[in-house]
Figure 1 (spheres, rainbow, N blue to C red):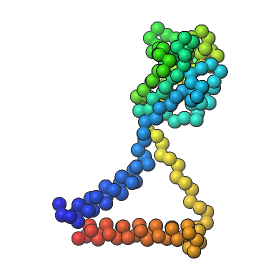
Figure 2: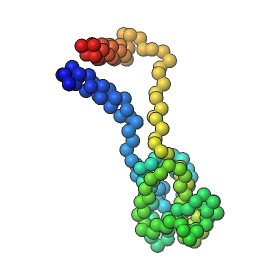
Figure 3: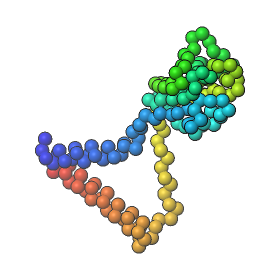
Figure 4: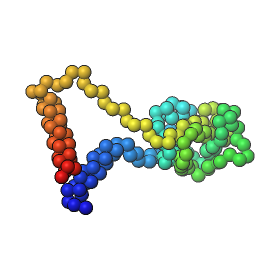
Length: 172
């Protein structure tokens, strides 16, 4: 490959990397209940509404082992606070649950009447994170003499130069 072709490939790879970099997600650890942990008298529905769960993330349940556990069940058992014989149960007090597939997941505390008292969590795991919302452009363009206007003009010039160089290299 000639040096010009190598340069074109390098520029293309750099441009694609920059274009797709924001879409690359890093797995998150979600401590259930944040500072409260897995405990009674906490609104886990409201907590979950402020989070986004994606395949590859991990839920961390922190609690005192003597009074709580974590039970994963299906939807109907979740609604009824029913712990079937085949339910997955964690009891370490520092339980890490890998979110390895997309879809709904249901958890509750199986001790005493804790589930009926609201110690339950339903989440929806997404395959991938949705794209971040793009900022809205200003309604009025900044005047060309303002710093923002000058920066906008220089950015436009830089894009034009890079495009012209890439086209020239492709032609050569």
